[in-house]
Structures are given as C-alpha cells and as structure tokens.
Image (cartoon, rainbow, N blue to C red; front, top):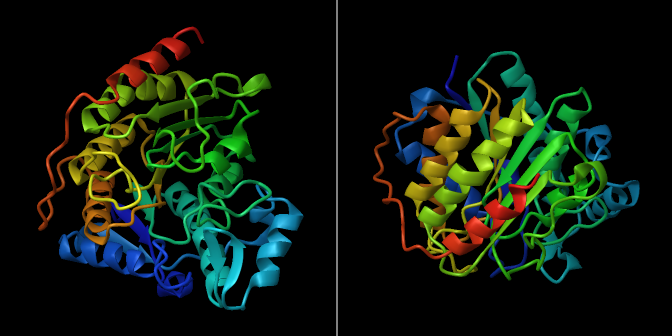
Length: 339
C-alpha cells in the first residue's frame, strides 16, 4: 500500500487560457516536477484520474451550467467571464479534475493508501452551482463532498487558498452535513467571505470564514487552526477532511499579498492530517501562481499527507511569523464560541 495516491494526467495541461493568463499549464508541470525532485517516489502511487460522470457533477451544478460548459467544449478561446476561459482541451481537463476526487474516495475506502492529492486543473473552488468563475469550471472539491454526503458521511472542507472559496460556500451554506472553513485575504477577489457569513437555516454555524488582512503570516493561520479550526472539526465529527490546497497565500505569489511559506503549508496540512480519521484525507490543488512557490508548497503538502516525519530532497522554507492577522483570528474565535 502506498502512503499517498497522487492523481495526475497530462491532459489537464491541455486546458489553455490565453497567453499571459496566470492559471497556465506550466502550473501543473511545476507541481509534478517538484514532487519528482523531492525524492518522494517510493511513497507516491501515481494514478490517472477518471472523468467525472454527469450524474456526479449534477449533484452540485445545475443542468444549465453543465450544458454551457459542454457547449464550449472543443472550441478555442471561449471566454466565460473576464477571468475564466476555455480552450479545445478544457472540457476534458475539467471532467478529469472533478473525477479525481471521486477516484480518490474509492481508493481510500478500499484501503489502497492513507491519503490522496488531486494534482489537477482547472481549479474549482470559485465555481458556484450555477456559474463558472475565477478560473474555475466545475467545483472539484464540492463534487467529491456531495458524493460523500449522499451516502450519509460528514465532510469538513478546509480551504487555505488566498481567495475565498465562494463556490464551495454557496454549495453548502444551508447544510449541516458539511463544515466549510476558509482562510483568505480580504478584501480580495471574489469579495465574499466576511466573518459574519456563517451559514443559514440548519447550516448556521457550519461555515467559518477568516477574512485575513494583507500581510498575514503563518503564525496567524496556525493560531486560527489551533484555536478554532481543529476544535470545530472535532466537534463536528467529520468522517472525511477535504482540503482546498491553494498555494497563492505564499509570500512570492504575484496575485496576492499574504506572507505564508511552504513551511506554513506543511504545518497547516499536518494539523489536518492529525485530526482526520485514518485514511480519510484528500487534498485538491487550487491556486498558486508563482511556479517555484507552487512547486515547494505542493511538496510540503504531499510530504505531510505521507506522514509528519517525511523528509524530502528539497529544502522547504521555515514557517513565517509577524503577528499580522491575529486580531481577526481572535474575533472569529469569539464569534463562533457562542455556537
């Protein structure tokens, strides 16, 4: 049995937004190359994902949304919104990205590994039930979560991408079988994710948002995990932990203004693996637009999925600190203490 399954497929590099777009095929190549450079080969079981069936995608997305993506399939230079584009290979890539999580669930249920990492693109967490946006076509992590809740399992989704996972939040905002947690730079695209967005109806209290100020560093994120996120997951009783592993909170990312390092991404992932039920952790690649930072952070995340004592042939950065964002963390902690 491998320690971690990594789902990867060169076909996801055939999703090609226009030249100069930050969500480019080189992101996939940098992440794959990083894992090979890191010397983690014996612990990784590399697998090709299956395309998600329509039935699974329709568990999250409306028929009109799916039909619009399918209608643009096979065409070059289709612009869905100012930031979101499709090329001839985009539909296949999007189906593979959504299908990777379903394959990972089946493999972990069968005891074939202790965790999984879906190294896919396009990313997914901005795609709402009815709309493609923010570089995202289908919401990969939400499709996986829905497949789990459909059979009565409870899912915690933790999103540490620098941008708020608005699409994932929208999918589960009124649900009590999914705990959604997002730490994100605020205000930043897409402008959602205020601390007061905590769910509606039976979902009240099952959404936890940390709107972090620009310049926030890893110590604030770790404080959030230790004081709010991990206790919330334990109270919720998650059967599975799914991670929206976006690495654009890295201090070198060109689109954001946060101060995390690859060492911070390791520490955050380590905490989630530690609280998860054995063999029930899956991470999904989301953002991350500096290629070296993306590579190092992918290594950091996968190494922690393998195990907390894993060493790599690539030196990771130290955890960051600076105190920026601590006040927001404490405010969110106070807000959710009443629940």
